[in-house]
Length: 108
Length: 127
Image 1 (cartoon, rainbow over the protein chains, first blue to last red):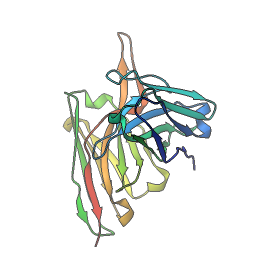
Image 2: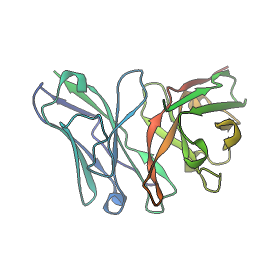
Image 3: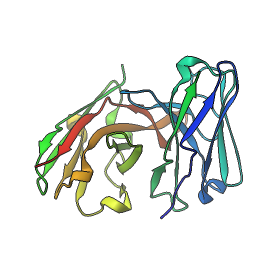
């Protein structure tokens, strides 16, 4: 079955750049989307279609994709960015959707 | 305000059944595809199922086919998930989430990712 692979954890100091990767074979043809989930809350879309930021999401959040790897970048990470981040995409047929395993971002 | 509110969660014994509901408000429900996504305690997000606006297209995660059934009633702005033969591993918070859709003056486009989520309802499968 198709999978998206993320690092379990990423840690940075406040003001540093955090990068979270997501790898999967179908990402060469399918978009990656990114969700932020803070403890006890519903997920929030922070990047869609590889690199587009929804309105209301801070400019420090950006996305990119190359080959089989999509990357979420948080430039100048802040303490309030501590959360779990999930990539999301579909398989090549478009009928199966899946999340990556999630990456816990620690900013301290 | 665009809103999704889930209900119907609770404690059920292994092998039992449960029907979850999700009521939508603030948008034209019948024109949007809606999904169920779940999250087991301390675990990641798992996509469960999606249904198109007119129920023409229905998809399930391969791991769940045969036990769960998604449906909707557009007259009631409601989405459902019928869950049968429940197992301990089905214990999770279940979210409903709307697929993004954008319209301009000429047409509308639907996208295969979620932009609005409910707060979730908790299902516990235990004897």
